[in-house]
Length: 516
Image (cartoon, rainbow, N blue to C red):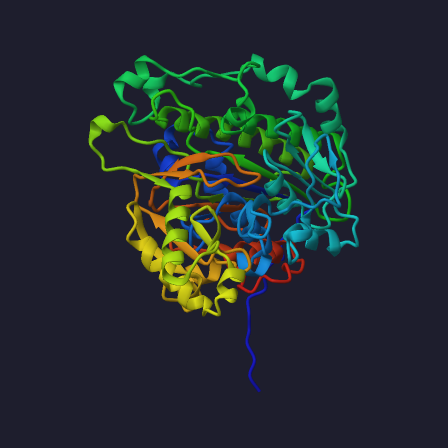
């Protein structure tokens, strides 16, 4: 008979409130540089009172929607079916939101979304099911995909800022409209306030670390004028949107009975620390430092409200960073950094001509979106060709094109022979949504998505290939103050949160929970 003796330990109380926070662009290096400027109640509290994970490993770089889905489901894109915020339909040659659902009408928006595309359960779903629906799950985010993924299938509500109406919008899929939201939309609409806002440095510019002298002498001042058609985009990329989110979250907590009942309640937020892409000269270090300090203040105010509602130390808070979307701009030509322009439209045209020369007339390339080339399966079938062979021919041609650094076929990815981390790339690639051939563009080159697609306006990005550390923090009952410096698989967050809450893990969360 085999047995063991364990020292009796007090079981921590089950949290009645859990707050999940996603932060796009959160970088551990910036937290270190700004440590002397951070308040005691924001990021420092997370560092000092909970488990601090220095490097959360997503496997490969994911966009904000896919990263959020991975954290809240504990599963990768092929399993949860959220590979990115948008998806390409080769048949219709159209790009739409991955969460687009014509069956769900918009509320304060003409766009239609629902969580139907999320193929598995989320932390929010499990919170709701734990107490037969008596627990609450609410979410707030600048954009619909993050809000809906965090709310899940069973959530009470998910709200985001609509780009057209400039109101807090939701889907009729969700039934609750909290008073805090309706009050904002009718009494204090963002549209009536946004042009009165100005974003300037919170402290004297010279007090920020490593700022060039000229930046300190000529600090920025960003506004969101009614005359600017892109003002909502600018607002959502600024720390002003974080403050707006925080104020509504505080209103939620203050006006509703969170943590006052037997069931677990959940509130989820999505913040941004993405380097501001609309800075005057492309050097956005000052804006980035300022955004960190402003978010630190917002977190301190949020945590103070959580303490007042649930009691200090009684709520579970998990804050997770993920790499920022690529929003950089081209370096000035005077610096001599090699560059060029990769035109999607030109690449499609040349590839189609090449395949016609090999096999005969026809439309061989169905479309292009976000480095993915989609071949026309019907044309390949009409010529009785092997699809894998045509994909290999296309890859061989594209690899010789200027500005292309590497090329993979979907066959390469499935066979784990693509890239420096082939296993991670395979794990994060959704075959149902991937193109036939995927290209990586040479860093420094300008990528012009000028291929004519419905639902996409021509966009330009600068290819970069930088590693960014994404920290995460978990603070709550039974979680010791500990620093974890070894890389942690991002899929462990969902089962770890579930373990602390003593609820089931999401149904596709296959990784074990962290043990502190």
